[in-house]
Image 1 (cartoon, rainbow, N blue to C red):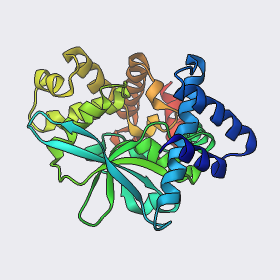
Image 2: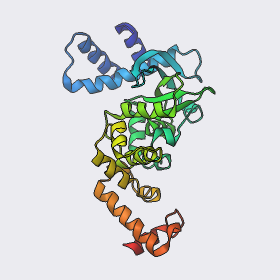
Image 3: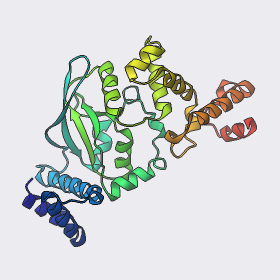
Image 4: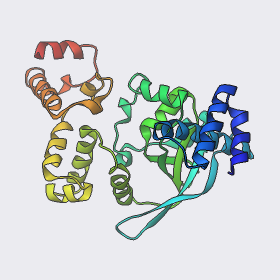
Amino acid sequence: MDTQNKLTVAKDLFNESDFLEYEKLLADSDAGKLKATKRTRFSELSFQVKKHADKLNSSTANASIQSGPANRTSLDDGTVIEWFSELIPADSVQDSTFVLESNNGRSQSLLTEFSLSLMTHTIRKNCQFYPAYGVRHKDGRIEIIDGSRRRMSCVFGGTDFSVYVTNTSLTPEQIKSLRVILQSAREAALYDVGMDCIALKNQGLNGKDIAKFLNISESKVSRAKLAAQAPLVFLKLFDDYSVLSLADYKQLVDIKNVLVESKGENVINEDSDFLGHVGQAL
């Protein structure tokens, strides 16, 4: 969009105060005078303008909005993946997208409205700063391979969902390789890394091979596998399990072992006496 079109969309979108702020920031940006302290705010407003422009240009309000290829990703096997930017309307997110834990790597049962309250608030109040990534299946639905927390935050918050989508058919092995690339820019929760390690171990890979595949050290593989021994029901007790340290996971595993030794394997479930059993173990 040129400057005039951006301002036209912004005027339709923002209240007077936000419009005047955006108008000034846009002018400063075009003139190369945008201050570093204003760049984040300008990016937020610009993203909202782009989203609104996509909505206005859509021919149908209930269909996802797709633009041309946004970028490309090359896998080690030579496969080149083209990504198309889509904006999925809030009322379609739940039905038109889905997550397979085996491919996504994140335990979906931990994504509760409470645990995602901060992200939901941020997306609702500002915008979704980073699009998710997904693969379109033959039935038209999009499997989210990276960004399941953002997906559920949009569901809880009733907001549109921004996704980079590929129409390329990918094998589970290619999806795992792709997730390593997509997640390389941020630190994943140790538990989630551990679940990946266990899945790869079950496929016959040893520690060295797992470390090479995930592009992490062998020592981290060991730490992550220990974290993955913590029962899922334990992690649900925390607002955000991603902040847990290795020492925290060790303590949870110790508690699990005490419970299993004294009460048996079946004690690790979500029955009504669970917290009481934990109290006895402590």
